[in-house]
Image (cartoon, rainbow, N blue to C red):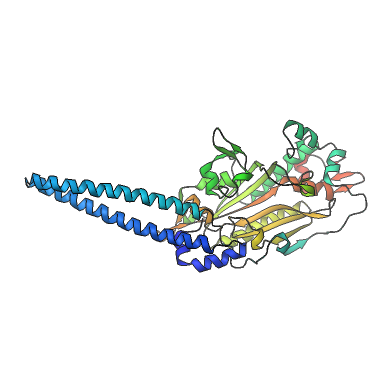
Amino acid sequence: MLSLNFIRENAQEVINRLTIKNFAGTEIIRQVVALDDRRRETQKQLDDLQARGNAIAKEIGILFKSGKTEEANQLKAQSGAVRDQAKELDATLQHIKQELDSLLVRVPNLPHPSIPGGKSSEDNIVVMQEGRVEDGPAGLLPHWDLTAKYDLIDFGLGNKITGSGFPLYKGKGARLQRALINFFLDEAVRAGYLEVQPPYLVNADSAYATGQLPDKDGQMYHAGIDDLYLIPTAEVPVTNIYRDSILRERDLPLKNVAYSACFRREAGSYGKDVRGLNRLHQFDKVEIVQIAHPDHSYDVLEEMRDYVTGLLRKLELPFRILKLCGGDMSFTSSFTYDMEVWSAGQSRWLEVSSISNFESFQANRLKLRFKDESGKIRPAHTLNGSALALPRIVAALLENNQTPEGIRIPAALVPFTGFEKIA
């Protein structure tokens, strides 16, 4: 979340920048500043009362030592009254803090000053595009037909076992999944990322710390009895490794990679965008996370973008990179690149990765800080990206590599699949 001091000192700038995300922040920022004024005044009154109580307690001790018992007892009555007033003030202060926190968690992260305005994905900016993008020859099949033709995925069985959006991979379809996961993990480790294997369920504190709660509460699967959430991405548990931590400046950046299954309710999704592998409730993804120095986090963002670009080139997929406009950015992001691959069988672009810099927004919730060389404690910056999400990668691989003889496997994947063609 945004720093309270930053909001106080830059209230109008905060309001102006939030408009880029189409968030009307005037009223809530005014309420935040007014509540903080009350908090400060109440805290001062409480501090003054506590100081007075301490002074009275000291004087009582002196009186008792001097044998002035009657005077000491009179002061004890005053001391009790001061304690009662302090107790009431403290309760008021805690209530104000709760109100303030409930407002702060509703304020999105500020977009980077370079982020363009816009209402939706239609207003995103294409930064670059690579590879041949054209309608293929007549008769190209979409991936849902290809998976049926070659017996790779059974959507009906997944629906029978669980429900819509939970496909069952089998045979070479399952092996392709495993190959992609291993390929992505090995590439990340070679690039200097430390591999971790995180839990798939997190507690509410973890979901809150990375911004999934309360913003995306309705999009997560919740195990009510235990009050645990199935992760929507490995970003959540991996970033929470560093919750309540003070890191050393010389250790930054910290780089982690993790494979996980991901679970998203995707409430309200319908139509062509959800057919086949286009949008699922459970899917596999390899996630990269970096904890960076604030002075270098945008260099890290570009490094992560270049890394994911390299993966797409190795998979021989046509792709493009988008810089998201304010209206298409997430609640927590300051700057996001989306990576999309061309789906030849559907003649459309499919998003396969988002790479984001959250600046200090998550770190403030996480209480994730570092000590710089001068000894000052500062919030770190957090970044993450999909490297990569499997379903749409699989869809694009199948559709873009279909031939009359079968589906060609890109050379970089062959050592992992053990086969060069699906036929």
